[in-house]
Length: 377
Image (tube, rainbow, N blue to C red):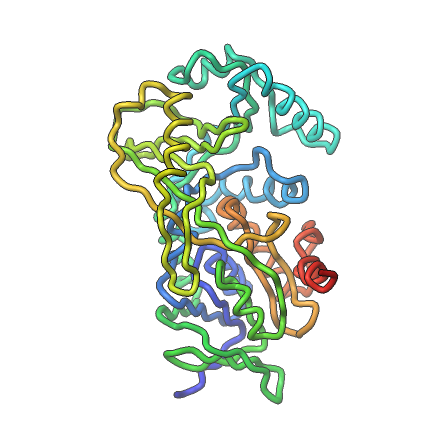
């Protein structure tokens, strides 16, 4: 097989891989994406596409707020609005006993200097979501949050990346990563061999395997989050709704379907790239939805699925340079909340690779933190 030479090889064709490639190509780098299946095949194509700053881990808040600014200007970045609507995200306290959870969160955020999360009373909640059950008591809201269309977003980022000169090679499962005698890495796949001084590991649930090929031992788990989609109905609500203490993420798509998630877990066979719905678990999400929105009880479910994504021990992503080997960068482990961060993480990778550093706060996401935990264990 012939050797293809480029500046950067991105392993993984999900949204984070596309975003990193897009930002690097616009910074003047020649970039190739190697995707073992097809672009957006796994986590990116299975996501509920929430665009959420609400209830983020404090370490993620700075880059999440920057990402939100980017989402509000997403058409200028990728040439398409990506189906993004900023109707807010709301975390509901069903009962008075849940209210202290929201009050504590507001106090924590205010103490850290953030004011994008707001506590609202029952009257305001019912004004914003008149179809919700009247037994609710209060809610936390981030009014600038919202949701997007995942497949439209994948298509938009792909078009933008290819227009910027990114080469996307699908069906290219990586079988080996080796350091040659010079500054380049040799990346062997089932369809060809590639060489580049820089490799970005954005392989999602398979990222630990890719890291190991390059010499980094990074512990990684996985998630198989499930989703429900109902038949189409007339407009019911605009914000995305979750609830304290229960697995629920509830929204209505542009097509009129209800999209119900919340992190309930199915099962996944990672080596086989197969995931399975656990209907007993899925029923918990349906119950939460009908308790909060009794009017949806008679609706038919038209499909459900389970995705496959990487999960870290602390549920924070891995974003940064390998502490062991030159030219290897890791971007994975978003643990079910990576969609909103896509635009800013690509910009961070361009900073690190083109400029050698970034002014954004990413210390908490260093790969070394997980490697140190494994070493101690």
